[in-house]
Length: 528
Image (cartoon, rainbow, N blue to C red):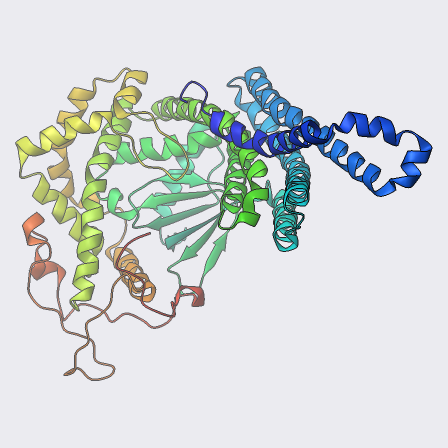
């Protein structure tokens, strides 16, 4: 199966035409259709047995249609494979050819779904008619409607292809007037690289950096905000741990995806690739027998996705390594590798802190500044030198998370930049504590970090991922009090006396959350 990964969908693709061929072969064996057809060619017999002759013609048509559908089911994947070989790893050709091929494939899939649906319907019809002389009208109608609905759904998806994707982010859009130094630095990096500066810069609490050309819906402002154009996302907690040269390297890497030939690939291939995934999701919902008509379309698009997924992974890895080299042209190579190692390390701690934040909310306590809490948690980690060193070494072979691409390992990226990763790991660890204790780690204002924390807590409560405890002794509008207890003490000190201050914690505002985020019932206590 690994040598031929689309064997399973190919078998599904040929299944329905094979059913039609087998059905007509059995009927031909029993009734000798060729002899009957020869007899029906005589005008007298055709007039006398018009109904029987018509039935024979329909069965012959079923046989011919099944044979042609079977050949098409085998030929189309071969065309896909041939096109994939011709375009190779040339991202310009992949971006152009893939978008065109997907649209043609969906049209072919629509035709195949309808033809295979008819083949299956007539196979069932003649099987029942010639065996028990009863026709399952309800079943045949259900299969036919299933094929029609699947075809219409695929046709609708064509109009969505190539549209800008939409990404929802909890965060804040940075205004130039309030963040002139940071945004000016980003624009300076873009100018040095010959890249177009991002149209928007958004900061949030998710532990990742990325640039996207998708439409970005920002939740966390006073009202929902939709951004178009290129958007650079910065992680507020990670800004605390990166030195200036490391931040420069990370931003340069992300902007490197919109330099030169990578731009067309980023804007054309990614939306089509995601929309094809959405089409597959719609077809993969198989719940009833009538949904069998969706199987040919699901199989054909799965083969196309499988063939080009390998291209996407190979090109994605090359893109990352090229973006690394672009970043290294304006920042030290060691700075980028150091940033990747740090991000891989602390991203684990951020996940734990988020769970602790939910637990604190469930207990009626509010952390005032999650970025500050995060920084103190990382300081605690640096106290355990030997254990942390082992963790850092493991991170050499890890990848940094990203919304779209599969990244090379840190070790591969270090080799690409001719960097001694062992030396970088040790230096990153030794400098981390000193940097966290310096004022240079405060790139964003404390007020902005507290607003992000407030937005995070409000969204968690609105989604039901956290729930304030019921307090019979508390008045209707009175906020539950916090207590001087340590959050997550078994995982490291979070300095409760600094983080859980009842006199400084601000009440959560009632406005600012979109209506679609208001659930009708409490969601389970898990993150999706």
